Amino acid sequence: MKKIILVLGLTLALTAAVPATVIFTGDWSVNSAAGTIPDNSSVGITAQQAMGAAYNGDGNSGISDVEVRLTISGGYNGDLYGYLMFDNGTSAQTTVLLNRVSGIGVAGASGFDNITLSDAGTGGSIQSTVTATGGSYTAYHTLDTTADSAGGFGGMNVSGGGTWTLFLADLSAGDQSQLVSWGLNVSVVPEPVTYALGIFGGAMALLVLGCRIARQN
Image 1 (cartoon, rainbow, N blue to C red):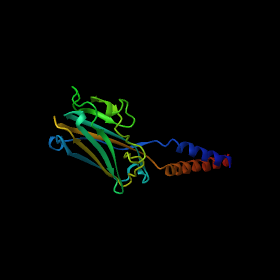
Image 2 (cartoon, rainbow, N blue to C red):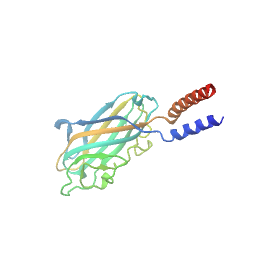
Image 3 (cartoon, rainbow, N blue to C red):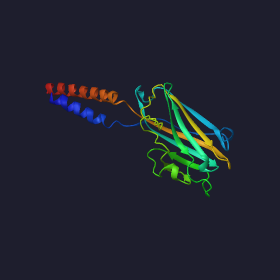
Image 4 (cartoon, rainbow, N blue to C red):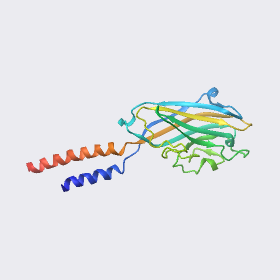
């Protein structure tokens, strides 16, 4: 009985530290025609990437973290509005990435060069930066919170894959911006129950084997 209690305790402890796994990553260049953001227009542009099914070998895996990389040339940062949407075929969530960040009319506030937007960004909020080059910034809304009115992706099921859509618009007249490239890192954490059952099954097998060896000796 004591051994079983020990195994259960170990299982719960390991379940509490379920590791996140990056299951989808990529960077995609955008040609000049598709990447030109119409000036002073809410029509904007979209870029899409499909994500295949059954990632991580776990049909119950849910999104735990999303990072977005953007390289945008020209225009003014303060003109741009952008969001990211994920549709898994059953539901869709959207989160705002850029919402006319500060910098309009400021020298050097043109474009975003290889920035990463993440809830764990180290360069502060993208909403308060004038220029951004090669840094990690928090997005306008966090990207991995539990799904709510802010549009978090947290917990969304990826077992059937889905489609990621990036939208960008230039909402003020002036210079024109160009989406040069964008990228994603998507991580999941397996359902705790599924993870715990796997650990518990393995622990019990080792316990039975250990008891057999002890009896033989």
